[in-house]
Length: 495
Ligand code: NAP
Ligand code: MG
Image (cartoon, rainbow, N blue to C red):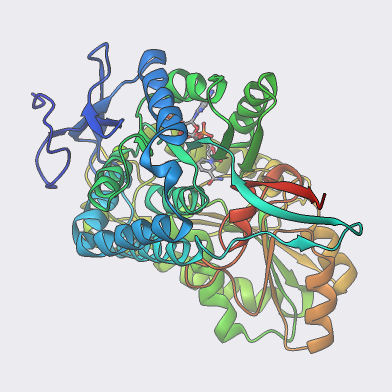
């Protein structure tokens, strides 16, 4: 039996907990009393529950965010004061780092060290945006004689953030850090599969001095609470990270209210290995880029393009690495954990089966630990070779530990294949040739291009976002502050 809701929220990990929404600075259940059970992906066992919020709960959260934006102390604070609250939140996340890392790892099944990496990035996001809050200012513009003109950066108002289950701590931090730094108020809808750390962070934000109503979190199903939030007329801006299909639905809802959106919709990101690449440096990064978080990463390096002269050598080396990979429960801190839920595990299995039917060859696969609990959602990592660049495996996001490798000849073909999907989120280019590094990096259509690297240290400072079906708008870095505000131009005539 689950415990009845308590007002201390989630202060411990390891016992069944009934978590509550954070609305208007108070911890409350869904008005209907309905709850969603929270299971650990490593064993499928229920260990907590969250409110199954509906339209009324979302409405209460949006109203409290609106009130806090228009009348509360938040609207009178200086940018420096807002920054100080974010810095305090960063410090509090650090104080509670072990608890948050363990909770995230248990809720999502990610290996323990990935939970720690996610908390470390979250600490850095709140620190970064705390420091940036009073530095995102406008310009004075030379204009007509007898006039003074300047721009200022105004908050949108109430920002709705719809967060996925793969990196809740990190994605919440990049959304909340930038939105709060610019003076917006927030209503967050985390994914029903991984809501616990978002609730805990909203609790810590109150402790850090965030006024009531500034940082609200409502949990529930996407089609219910998420849809109600994205259609709510009281929301001024929506930021979404997740699947392309859900992103389309959210943009359609936003269009009915003519409001702005940031869309971060995943990718099919290539890593290109030229024949002169430093393979000792490249190959461990190539493997990690597809198994990190079980491949459930929007920026996963899910396509590998290998130049012909080194193709066989690279595939043989990767086959050895893949064969040794083991999926284990989160607490074993193995190469990878389970996938988030049964649906995702089935989806990955179906895509592997379809790829084989399409003629792709399984070059190597890892294993699932013998003692992995029956109820967990494990999938062994798979390395595919000889993939048809137009097949589903080459074109669509698997969101699992599945790497699709192809060969190419020369720069032209490398660029054509790299740009040959509808996505454009991240790319990696591996070559020692300086001219080629610049030529290829420049021609790749992606929000981030890494040369002789792939992803780096969380990338809090680095603007991030997509081209094409990977979405639009930019998160992370200073650039996110522009998405989270609107420019106002003020003109004075000297009469
Ligand atoms: P999803 O549907 O895009 O979920 C992302 C978020 O949107 C969750 O909070 C979800 O809530 C919410 N949501 C779902 N339907 C909604 C609606 N109609 N209106 C408003 N919000 C809604 O992703 P998913 O179904 O969990 O995963 C499916 C696929 O999405 C994956 O296989 C992967 O390809 C992709 N994905 C990409 C990312 C990324 O970082 N780019 C992250 C996650 C998933 P609930 O989860 O509570 O329903
Ligand atoms: Mg969970």
